[in-house]
Image 1 (cartoon, rainbow, N blue to C red):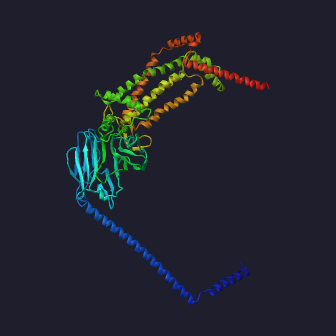
Image 2 (image 1 turned 60 degrees about the horizontal axis):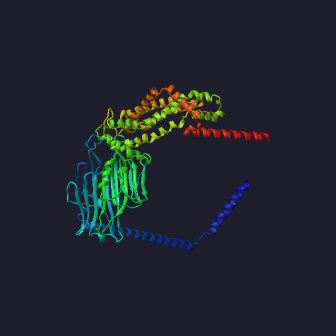
Image 3 (image 1 turned 135 degrees about the horizontal axis):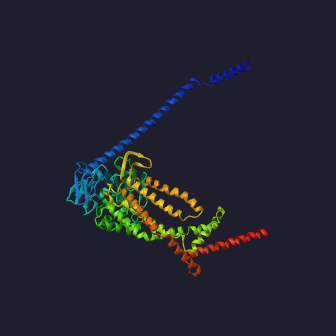
Length: 635
């Protein structure tokens, strides 16, 4: 920094200091400023004090209003706000329900005749710690919540009870219960002398229903697939919340008439005579494995309520097994006259599969169980019956493959000149022409197998939902409704779980054997590059059993056993047909067919005629294309 620069900085500083001193306010001006700041501070403090006073007044007013409401509530339900919870038991041969005088609702449900995981003779669907149900009524000055009230029981028998909460002389809230002969509980809630407590427009009430859903079966993951909040649309049809992820306050934008907290084999259903209004909210939260629970359910509902007491709010509750016939019978016992479709709680498959299970599998299953057979024997007999019914289709499919196998040398000879990649179209045409000569249709072997697929899939949906398999022992399997571990290690491994299921291993081995036999049969009829392509498909087919293992290791032993038996008999049928088929005689039959077609061209029909017609059309198009190309070259 040179001398001139330093001099410049000193002069600038001097100018700034001098300007500040010249603009400094006088003592009189400073006094006025201090006085003005004091006035602003006083105003600010006064505004703060006013705001605090207003807030305090609002708080005091709210507290006074709350205190007054509490006094009104105490005055209104003086005898119903205090007491001790006492149990009241309703029971029959199939169901035992415990109601509490605190809240006046069911707090425990025991389903008789079904063993639990520990071997106890009955299943506890829920207890007072796991389910809460409350009805909420919006009054002029206060909300009435039934869970806060103590009810007085009267008219107590094994099947009936009346719960009454007295608000004031001549004013009461009463709940009547009547237990039917099976699993249906009828309930009616009505007010008496309380219309003045509600606004004139009141015509509904709120319902809050919560349940922590117990794990009832051994397989947590498998049971969780079938545990979901399910509901029924008032105009028909059922739906459910997603059973594989958490869902919170899902709004249902349609009128519904029942809601079900469902596990794999048992359900708690709440049915409203006057329906549940639109915009019901439902929540389903997955629970951790090992906690003893599957999901945390919640439903927020609205339904009709008459404050005058002239009409009761009526409900029916089903606490029982997910058994198709039982649910049909229970619906007949309902007094609401609705088509409830409760049997939909037993899932019978997609729309194309359901009729098979509904009108065939169910009747066959009922017929076989009526003889008192063990459920394992029933599964074997169902398999044999289905194999007998589908045997004509299986035989037709096999014979189609056998015809293609014995014609393979002729196909090789007819297509040997088409060995280049660009000749594949001509090769296919030559093959189809050869099949046409002998009246063989390659598709005739596929269609019968496709027809069998719905039957095979039907049992996939039916067996896991058949409560009759629950707790049934067969051979080494302790329970056909859950997996049968040969080894367990108590720690989750991704893709496998915490065990190895023996029936799953047997199913996969049988699948591998059947795949090997099927691939070998198809390989015998492949020509040229088809045989090479078959090798790639062969590896894929062998990987299928491994994929099935990771899928079915958690599935029930009954389902795996059915598939094992089914594949075993399928392999046995294929082996028998192969051993009893004389290739020379079959070829001779085809030769005679060829001569008949050759001598009488008009006799050709069906697939063979269509193939021949298509071949002629292809050849004609090819000829025209070649002529066009030749004309272009000449030009």
